[in-house]
Length: 211
Image (cartoon, rainbow, N blue to C red; front, side, top):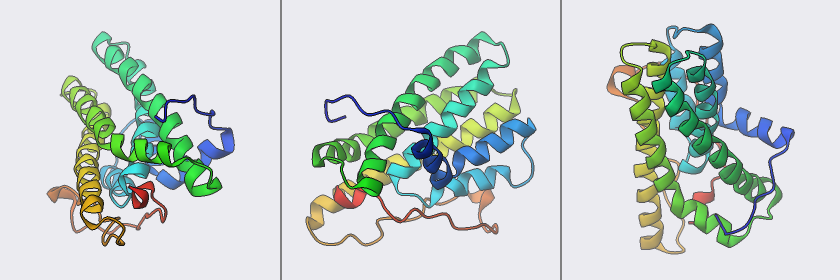
């Protein structure tokens, strides 16, 4: 993105992205418990659904990195191959998108070119995550259930956010410099998870306002 080498995220910056995106905290909790408990999948969906696509992409990347390590622990070649691919995509995405997001929303130093590139590449990266999480979910059927459950959830959110990213860019092009309405529209939960009680998790700033 932007054709330049990005400055590596430091521990404080990375930690803030974990907290803001929330989904890696939920993913880690599930992995540490080594089982999916009641409400876990709903919590994982909700940790991503209220975000704009840029922060959702960061959350998916950080969660994907955790999931890749768990996948390797099973010692299965089919899972390990996909885990390696997921690790590569997750780390690169977290570093590149996370850096642009931190620079733009915290320090105000990101370049217009970097923001433009990230916004317009987001849907493609989200589609890559969608495809990869779909493959993982299929390979993990019927077991390991924990991998299948997390991957299926992340797949749904990645696909929904990819669609939203495209729609938001098209809307920006139509209204040009006018203020967007609904720039942070919620991604709906799957039908079976609707009508549940949950805490809102909305990140105020989004690079998509500058699309």
